[in-house]
Length: 213
Ligand code: BG6
Ligand code: MG
Image 1 (cartoon, rainbow, N blue to C red):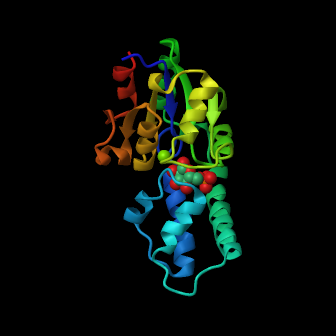
Image 2: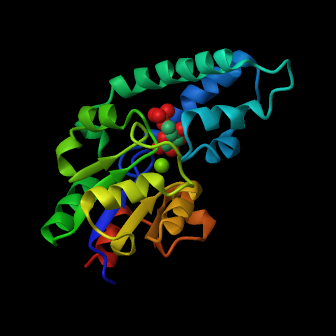
């Protein structure tokens, strides 16, 4: 395999902030009296905050919310989410993740982050991951979120490495779809394993080292 770069999703791959996304959406949904569960949460993986809210509101039967009200709800969810993030420390990154990143770099791979999140910089800073990556492409730099490939294509462009030579590591179905749409190889980790659409499956994070030899 002629992979030269690995582009990592952030939430649910490098760090388990996916559980904080869930808790924050759950709190907001409970306050609004809207049904929300793990299965609905699965559809929120990889998609933007605004699109996540639209998915949650599919279970709301009252008078439609105005754009302004929706904006306030999304902001509220983000405030709750950021309270969890503010408690994060470098110990929230597993040793096996840091070790795998180091070995990949020793082997000559270029590594990048490709995340829909607008909180990417904050999370990377809190967990001391900021300096590990050559390139960070995130939700503040794009107009279309996964499954659109924009965030990964931007990472590939910033790395100056062709999409066909990039491997995307994802926990979201939307993220695997985005990698495929961008002409990249894909490795599924966590929840995305169930989709069966990826080129590779990672049962454990360090399995990446068997793919990227
Ligand atoms: C993705 C998450 O990484 O970022 C989604 O998988 C989330 O669940 C999206 O909605 C946007 O995140 P944020 O931090 O900008 O609200
Ligand atoms: Mg993710």
